[in-house]
Image 1: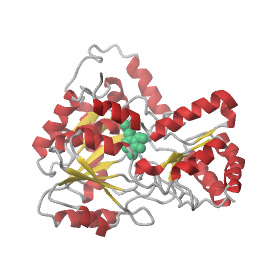
Image 2 (image 1 turned 180 degrees about the vertical axis):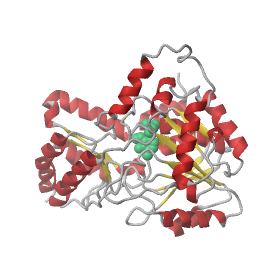
Image 3 (image 1 turned 180 degrees about the horizontal axis):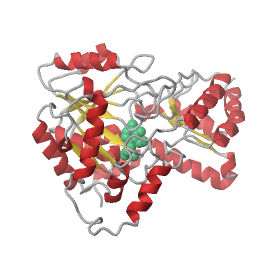
Image 4 (image 1 turned 90 degrees about the vertical axis):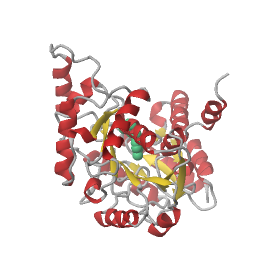
Length: 389
Ligand SMILES: Cc1ncc(COP(=O)(O)O)c(C=O)c1O
């Protein structure tokens, strides 16, 4: 028999994955063109041409040893490139030693949490948060503490201060945020640093940044390392370069970070022993040749605006996200998120109830989908809302 915990956790499942499976089931019955699946944050853009070119070159290289084991932290050249990039971007002292190449942001978050947490120590999650954080914290032996945000999805500093205890080890921030799209300003980061500096023990900030480049209009994502000395960045090329299946990212911190030497050694140790061993070799070489390619967000912006227009036209309340590629509307009054999602599914619209994101009165829609999905959904959304009259 498998472990009881495994059985319990599997039974709880992932709402996002459940919806994704339901989308496939409906598509098989009604045809893919009649299903409007907004469940998964899976970029539908292709990776940048320069990245694909570099991949071809690397794949055909005759240099020996390119497929061998390497240092668990990754190639020295890759770490140097990232360190240069991060220190230029933030002005903070980031050394190659302070960079560990990882299996995406998920890999980074897992090794960071495992490196920081003693059993029972607390990690603050600001609502709404990426659902998987609770699992990563639990698997690292920690306890998640969920804190409310303000109406505009910005941190509520009173709530944050009240949530800090002697057991608080870290806060996870995610800007641009999945699911709300909110971006934290430099002033917000400064305020966060003031709050943390006033505590009598070190509290790390884990900055999960896979959507860093996906921002709209004049929105700016300030470099967290400039403002928060004890920040550990979890970065990934999954979203910016549309490479989620390739699993490539990094964890990094600046040399002024608390317990720097021990932290780096622990990150490298857990990269190995959690079974990642090292980040994919070829992708380390490919992405670090191309660290500052412009990310074209025009397609996402067009889709954001169109889907937002459709929702608002039929009376669904939704704020305009400044970044990432999700809409996070409020559930119409009188319904739970699960009931609203079920009404939507009757019209072949798949979206995710935000219970797992810590806000059960909201749902999440990913607009990393074809324009035709958005266009096709218009009538279906109207039908859902008319059915509620
Ligand atoms: C906020 C957030 N963090 C981390 C991840 C994991 O990303 P990766 O593919 O880099 O592991 C995701 C993926 O959707 C995400 O939305």
